[in-house]
Image (tube, rainbow, N blue to C red; front, side, top):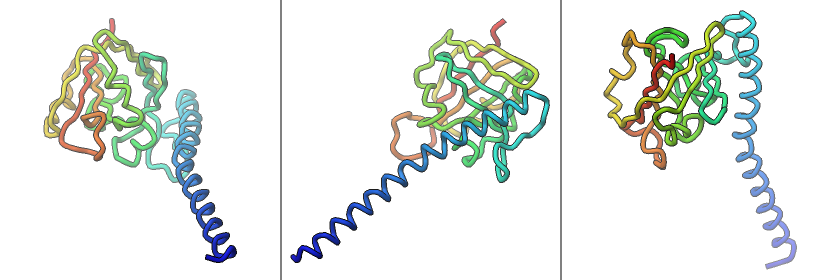
Amino acid sequence: MSPRLTCRIISSMVMIGLALIAWSAWIPAKALLAQGLLAQAWQQTLLGEERVRPWPWADTWPVARLRTTDGKSLYVLAGASGASMSFGPGHVSTSAPPGAADNVALAGHRDTHFAFLEYLKPADVLTLETASTLTRYVVESAEIVHESRVDVLERTGRSELTLITCFPFDAVVPGGPLRFVVHAVFDR
């Protein structure tokens, strides 16, 4: 093989490697930028604005902020579509709205925003903040259910928070028929 061909092959491999590194950095960079934009939209929401879109083409907006037991803040977005849940947990629109004295259901991806659910235990405290309320919930239980169990989303008349993600946590294939459901009740 000629030195010129060897040089071209090496140059091509370096360029491909750099392109792959740039591509892999793009997703975390986009997620980080999105969190900053969501934080700004949330601040505007706290100041009384409604449906503040974090970027002009967004089809969602922050409706609440969830604080985990370890102090992490997650901006809860309107709707639980796959597109919105790529940026944060989503409010399941058929459940009670955040801040209501009823069953508020939130869904998130098991490998990103809701990965912490695996480590929650009874008596852990979660806080849900809206523009007008701050509600503390205490984790009561967790269960694994089939995706057809939509009763976990229904309004109950009881002030509670239901957090839902796919199960098992370490699955390689996305989705699946099982859901990990955390039930938390109002902390008086």
